[in-house]
Length: 183
Image (cartoon, rainbow, N blue to C red; front, side, top):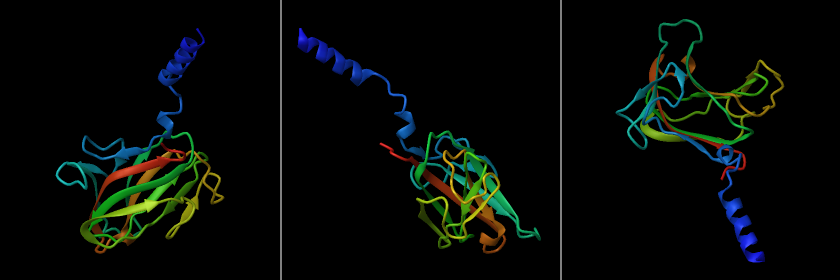
């Protein structure tokens, strides 16, 4: 009689739902079926994609704007803890950097500006530290330069200074957010 109880216990453990399973999986946003909850200056382009048939398309028309201006696409995040890495693919012959922003649990903004070669070819951007990077800035919230996890918002920003002529388009695809301890 001892073995059936062990077998029953193992079966229950194998089929019991785990509260943290969803929280530890990576999130992949492919834009095949829409904007993946991104809002702002962004649209789905169903004709261009790194993989699949769609991407997010950001168009910035800032040449006639005299001050430093930008366009933003942002999305709320619902993650339990730290982001281990963020990667995405982009292409643009019109720009040489993109601002990547996260907002932490205190409302502090952390942003860096990864550079890339202007090209019609897809290029991968990978970020593994959110409190450092090319032209890193932090402001608002705790304003101490430390990320207070979890992050509440992810944003992609095209700044006027990143555009070669003041106007341009950046396509983004295959955004992958990997939470700490992801399976």
